[in-house]
Image (cartoon, rainbow, N blue to C red; front, side):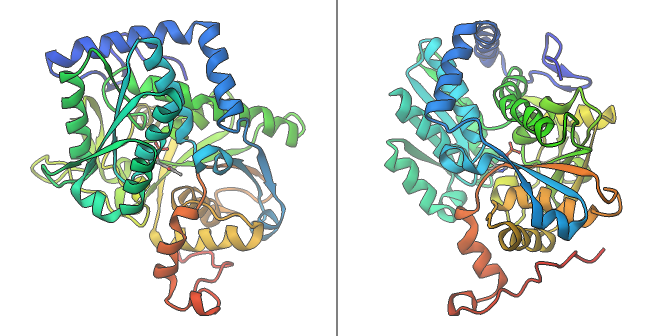
Length: 404
Ligand SMILES: *Cc1c(COP(=O)(O)O)cnc(C)c1O
């Protein structure tokens, strides 16, 4: 997966649909990233922070018991073991280091579920930068603990009260702040979306996980690549970083969206947040809300490069339902002793559903475990039954290959 064209297009997707006032900011960022990414000293500093602070490289774990259960060989790329518990740190460390190189002293970010806000607040604390996170009023109420986490890390969380008071409104607010404060501020965008150069830059910052995984898989598979590479897709950054490592191999690439936020399956091409991609929209072309049990996948669009990869047939995109996700979540916990975040449980659910059919018996599958599930256990307890606290077994059958 190479760079987009000079205007940020991946095929007919992407681009830079921003007001005149933002063009300068995007061009300045594009040039700064382009030069940093060719500078061995930048890579050295970034690699050093990701190692000594971020906990990279994360391992690839072969899941023996789960593999036996499913009849296919399952390998997990363990982003749950990175600092702050997900792949998000790769992107925010990259962007904050770039911001410092550009002489910026202030980071701003949008957040929905709060995870990207927490990651950005973490990077800002590490770099000694000030930090403002825009968050919809509705999301702030739903994710009160993450609001506190960001404040604990020294960030200021600003409530967004416009529109539906959720993630898409927070993006708009962050873009407005950026225009007004270009001199000292970098907008640390959270996924492979937004205007050029973000989809490209964020994919490159996440590429480290795919590159590591390819090496690690070759070691485990006797020099071969996995037959399948599967990752969940919200905006699509962990999937893009994963796919970047395997695009040149013969591995089949699969992105899995939440059934309630499946922009690729149910969306239509349109323009939002500075890019052209697939978007969930109503009949009037208004952006609709995504909704699933996993707040981290509730973005109503998908990164433009994914739209392109689907277009050219290099990757396929499918969805997983909430019930399948809960069952996969429990299955991994009970067969491997790993509690995944609900987001990558979507990728696992796809593997569970397709093992032995689309994924032939004995084939190998790499799944990106994009994050750990600590943040989700209380919600899962409430979803499964009220009885978990009293020591009763959860109501989901972990062997449960869900109904088709
Ligand atoms: C935020 C998040 C996602 C979704 O974001 P992408 O940009 O699609 O990767 C997935 N998994 C975890 C653990 C997350 O925190």
